[in-house]
Length: 454
Picture (tube, rainbow, N blue to C red):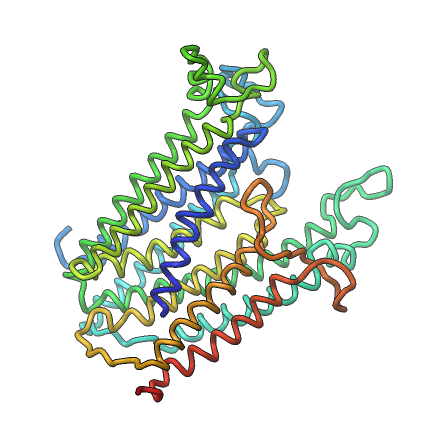
């Protein structure tokens, strides 16, 4: 069941969210968001590759802010400008320093974490899998409780509401005309509190996942390290592709726009001003559909390859699936670092890491030879019902993001509904997540009891 939920999560992001994100940003009125997104995806993949290489080198048995300077270039930048750009051909705000700094910090924390584990193993010859140890359960419990508490709190009280409580005179933005000249606004303080709270949640979930994956692979490294190395190499390749896409996007669309034969350039691109090419150019819907189809097909083939390889390359599928789940969760956060998006992005990141940690915990028996019990008629209905409830709850959970120019929400959600129901906002998505999630947990409990065999 956990593996089914995990594959649903991966499928939703690979086939639904990521291609939709790229399509909408490629066909939007500006390429700024797609430049930031491609750079974020590249940083995530390359950072994941570096962390995996650290793990391989340490454990493989074979000898082997918001000060106005978050983005670059700025509107006043004029450095090696070509094709009408501010820095080379890049538009304003194409480079996100917060995202790059977050990726570097994540790599550094991962290096310290796995280095400490490697030093401990040098003093302890035990290579068994202790299972879900108390530290893992503690981190997973703390992260889960904080995640649920924040979800419920944010549903009824948004950051703008808290900003008005903290600083009524200067709640949202700097306004010297009304006596609000300080950069420390109420929203700045509220978002800082929210971000610190969510950062602790993400770190707890990430620590639980990383430690559980370490224990999972420890007894069977000879069979799993090669698979982990393959995942790392492929992450590096995807990272390079995203980085190349980020770097050549503007020269590429300038070149495509010049395709005059049979009007292909105008068919694939749209330009608002003939005097501002490629700055005013975006891909047309037809061009976006072509790119979206290529990306979706590629990810779809990878998912079917995992199903095909389940029997013969199970170790690769297990390690690769949980690792990719964690990478996708982190990518969700790194491609949404703007103040208006990062709170929900951190919430989704923590939830994805929680799924990866739980998935890794139940994957222990996948490396052992275990018998299979017949579920019986009632058991199969419980499987079907639990999957259906999880599917509905997942639709509601993926409706929480209010990111512009991306997929439309399945169920309405507007944060800050007030302390009393009906006082404002729309909390339907959170209500569905809670109700259906509780029902799914109840069914899953009876499913795992295994007392209904017929």
